[in-house]
Amino acid sequence: MVVISLLSLVVSFLVFMGVRFAVYSLNPSNYLFADILIIIIGSFTVSLIFAIRQFRYMGRDKWRSQFFHSFVLRTFLINFAIIFIISLLWSW
Image (cartoon, rainbow, N blue to C red):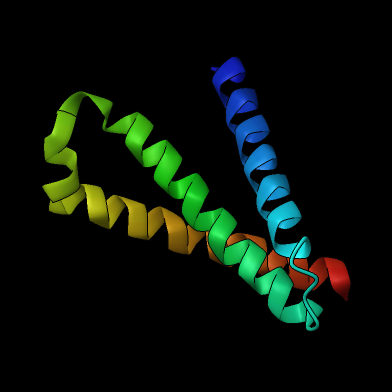
């Protein structure tokens, strides 16, 4: 169980670093907007990766499943809220 948690942490870190690199390679003029964009794209990507991993045995039916979409949306909102609050507290 600890190995899976550490693997999830590493995957999330790599996704956020990749998104950060991609966004900052475009040389944004507004860094606050760039940081919010990184949080949104990174949270959605991490939520989608782990939802696909959790629903891997559904095959092609997962893309039509309402439960899959509600799971992705719920985990995205939770991840986004937590990371946004942490980033606000960190910068304060």
